Amino acid sequence: MKFLTIFFLILLDNIIKNYKNIILLILIITIFLIQEFVPKNQLKICLCCIGKNENLYATEFVKHYKKIGYDKIFIYDNNEKNGEHFEEVINDYIKDGFVEVIDYRERNINSRPQFDAYKDCYERNYKLYDWLSFFDMDEYLELNKKFKSIHDFLNYKIFVKCQNIKINRIMYINNNSLYYENKSIEKRMKNSRCIGSEDIHIKSTVKGNLTVNYWDNIPNPHSSFLNVTSCSSSGKLIDFYSPFNNPPDLTNAKLNHYHFKSFEEYILKLKRGNADLTKHLNDDWVNQNYKFLSSEYKNNKEKMDIINKIFNNSKL
Image 1 (cartoon, rainbow, N blue to C red):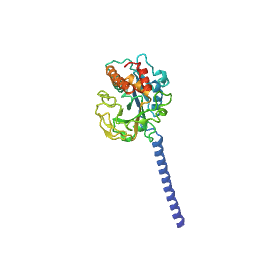
Image 2: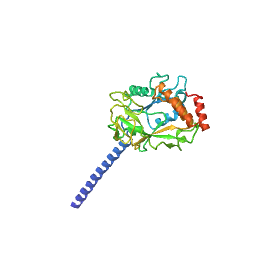
Image 3: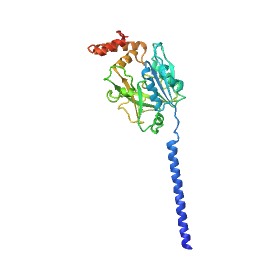
Image 4: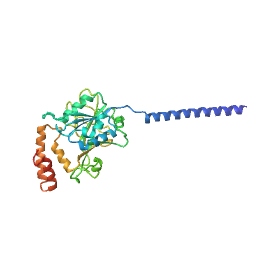
C-alpha cells in the first residue's frame, strides 16, 4: 500500500509538472503569434512631391510607393498652364484617394515652387500623418529586405528618438540610350551605372506634429535648418542642418535616383528647369546649360540633333 501511495504521488507530480510545461508552451506560442500577426503601431505615412512633365513615369512612381506601403501621395502639379495633366495617367489612383493632386501651375515667377510645395504639404498634413517623406518623382525608395513595408521601417526601434530620417541617394545614369523607351524604369536602368557609386546627398522623411513647420527655414530641398533630431538609415545621429551625409549610410534604406534615363530625356529635363529655382534663375541656368551642351556635342551629330530639336534651335 505504501508503495502504491509513493507511485501515485510521483505520477501526480509529473502530471502537474507536465501541465505547467504545457501552459508555458501555450503562453510562448501565444506571445509569438501576437508579435508576428497583431499589427504594430499603425502609423500614417505620406509622400510629398512636385512634378512637371512626369506623365511618362507617374504611374510607375505611384505603383512603387503604394507597393511599399505609403498611405497617401500628394503631388504638386507644376506643369505649364496648357501642359499635361496627371489625371491623364493616374486618374484611378486619384479617384480612390491614394493620390491627391494640388494645382501649382502658373506659380509666381519669383517663387521657388518646390520649396513652397514642401512647406504647404507639411502645413496641411503634419497633424494627420506620423511621418511625411519629401522625395522627387525620379527617386525610388528601396528598403532593406528585412522590412516588409515603410511601416515596418519607420516602426523600427532605432528610430524612436528620430524626428528626421535622412536617406542617402544613389544616382544612376544610362549612357547607352539616346531616346526614350516604352519600358519600366527598372528594365531601362538595369545596365546603367552609378555616379560615384554612392551619393552624399540625402532626402528627408520628417516626423509629423513638430511644434513648427519643418520647412519654415528651407535653404535647399534636402533639409531645413530646423534643429530636430536627425538620423541616418541605421539610426545614427547626424547633422540636422546638412543636405549631405558623408560617408553615405545605405544600411536600411536608399533612394535610387534615376537621374539620366536617356540623353533625350536628360535634355528635356534641362529645358523644363529646376523647381527649386525662381523663373529668372531658371532662365539663366537653362541658357548656361544650352551653351555648354552646344559646345560639348557640336561634333556629335545625333546628340546635337536631339538638343536642337528639343530647344527648337534656340536657347529657351
